[in-house]
Length: 591
Image (tube, rainbow, N blue to C red; front, top):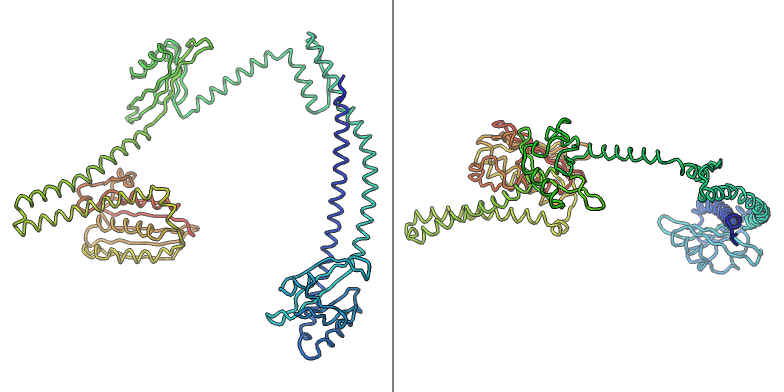
């Protein structure tokens, strides 16, 4: 029926595959044989060259060097078929086992000699017109201390390799011819074998297409053809299989629904709850008896029922936000309510998905608090400065004691505002990807920074008679920006001094464990309540705002510390007990 049937195409494909594969494989084998034997011969010649070079080390200097070297080389030549040539650093031949060196031309331009005189092993293959065959030459430098004083060259004929190569080439050619003949017969047989089941399947398919649904195939090939025949056999009796597949898909969807992180509630078109996944049942305490009986009001939030009724009426999806108090815990949900319709846009049910955005809402609230706190922190010193400046302008400037007091307060508040602005700018810089790309990290010793920070804050500690000790069991090296690392230590030590009563103690510890550098700042200060510990790294968060403000704190120091630590791939932990003290532990990867 077809000019190019599948049987003919299979036959030609097999033939082409074999006829192209055999020459390629044979060519590779020939190349590999030649290269392998060439490498073996090269290695052998280099070994002889190194032995000869070691032998000649004491003969490369003196007035009789040519005579002595040539005599020794000719003595060695009687023990091997190899040709040995010795050349000095200018390319002149000093000795040769086959020729008179006096009659030989300068060898400086020979490739193997040129390479060896540069301190490398050299090799080349050239045709010898004298011997009428290819020769392999290898050469290595002869050294006198660190100076190259010459080269020794070993050469050998390639006749044995060429003879073996030609013999294998003839054998492979005969093998290709025999294989090609066998391939023709094998291709015809394989084509018939594989097309016979196809012809049977084609005939059966025609019968089934003509209405003979009782036709069955009996193909036993153990491959895709048997699978195809089996599939055709099932075409007339697969209705039950389709039903089972539908049930399996339903179970799969139900399994996914029950294990979703979001609560999902399905309602009928009248707004009654028909299905609720495990998360919804756990959150809203939905029982089986409530299904198909109650609407969303049974959950205690009329806002939900109004959203469902609006979706059912308008036929459009909507988003609502719901704040709940479940099991004495405030949770915020973003609820997606959408109608499920038929192809004729008739609403059959309503889907509601509850996405818990409590953490997101908390982050939004903290951002709002951040803006409010920043505004408040800036407004407070500005109000103070403005008030005292107006008092001075109204006449208090004439009273030197009063004006000095007011100016001192203005200066203190200005410094406080400057610290706040500087730390806000530092946070902005650290958040800038471009700035972080410009800052270079380098291998940094940690222990010296402890002593530097201690010296920088010595005055602060002495004012409160606080003892600052350093315990450095190691000096680990980390990849860090030294200024950033110093900033971390300054912020932590400064906090320890501020919130430790007079005569207290602060201990700076440096350790190295496994692949980490560990920095510990431990004090005997006022401590942090357990409820506040998870929040101390939040921006502007202060355990005691009044005490922190009096101590000159901005509420940004620990946020900056955590940010820098995480930028270096590290972690920071805190343990604290009220009226006992606080311990900050920083872990940084070693360089």
